[in-house]
Amino acid sequence: MPPGTGDVQLSVSQNIPIAGAVIVSTPQDVALLDAHKGAEMFRKVHVPVLGLVQNMSVFQCPKCKHETHIFGSDGVRELAKTLGLDILGDVPLHINIRETCDSGQPVVISQPQSDAAKAYLKIAMEIVRRLPRPPA
Image (cartoon, rainbow, N blue to C red; front, side, top):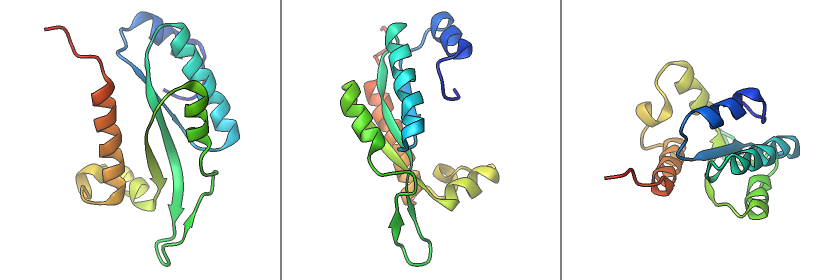
């Protein structure tokens, strides 16, 4: 869902059974405020927060490979510590992610061996590992 703790988020969490929530945020301060509010809202409505994902965590220049933390480096990690939650993974800011999604072939399908795809797959595995087992 989009950021925030508005009517849509509250209605969904109160009217649809949810096994868990994943909070995704960039590491910049303004985004972290929304992420913190979102995590607290889910806790108040008794939806387990499975963890946090740091989106756009680092940009690597495609030519020289220099890494730059455009949005900050560890904001989501610090928020996770504050909330007592785990980091599920980091998604880099990479042009291949945008290009493959725009073409309808997400990076996990079109470039499954890429670092970007591996980041998404790691996060997916962490989410599945934390989900409650369905009743037998």
